[in-house]
Image (cartoon, rainbow, N blue to C red):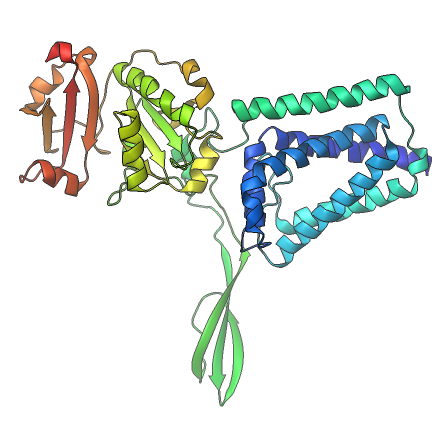
Length: 440
């Protein structure tokens, strides 16, 4: 029994530390997962959603601390009871998610390792069995060191967890496990290979046959039944291949501009999943950062899930010279754990990523300004572009002669409704430029 307890003590302790540190590396991500659990569709306790971040930090720090306590043998009775209570709770949670098919990923290992609901439940059942054995053999759990060193290690572990949690919240996760990490190409991560496994869906058809309802199961084809159709239910047997990125887009109310911007060479993308709840200090920093990027030749855009009123208010209040486009809120929360945050894209590849606290660290070397209106490329003869510089119409040749240093802001307009406000002539788009006062 002593040998078994020693082995399980190391196994359970290390697992709790690794699982806790992965989540502590990204407490915002774990808080989003808790909000999903708290929602009306799952546990129906939405009053806890505003406290999800605080709860996530407490839970993950407690998880790491319990793992360390178990390894060093600090307060074994408290540690074992706490581990038992935590694993019982999470076993219930993962069973509920799996049985009722509520949450697809429990978030046990953050974005580092995705587990299906039943895999998560199986993992928790095994851990529960191990911890019960530890409880039965708790008399064999002895401190590794004398009382003073053990207490110091426990205290330093707690202080480290507090510091690390604060650090990643004020900046970004130290290790990025998501699909939008530096070096990832968004188009590539969105692509589904031609030979990818297709989803398998089971269709259960209900027909009224001679006054009696009968069910017929197919893989999607309509069954040949001599009866009246009543209903059909579907069940996903195998989800097949799923790309790492599936909900990213850059849109106006009328048009999808995703391909356009992902094909540009130098794009600074400011991300705010909610402009209404964005950090005010972060919004204040946007103007100086965006103006510097525009001056250096970058295309600057914003991405948000907020409505038009919120977009206009933020632009007006902060005197911003770029436009916000629409994107799914969940995707924006995944791109960068900051509201607002910023990333640099080069033909869809993430080159830099920063929390709003670190906007000053964004490297913006001067680049050649290239404005792409569509996937064909800016400046082709078949493109019918209207160039407006300081409210005056320019020819293409005169426009291309403008020194990039003279440009204060550039606005690319492709939405047909906005274009019609400028001219009644049929054009594909408008390039509107404001020059610095010195060059007027």
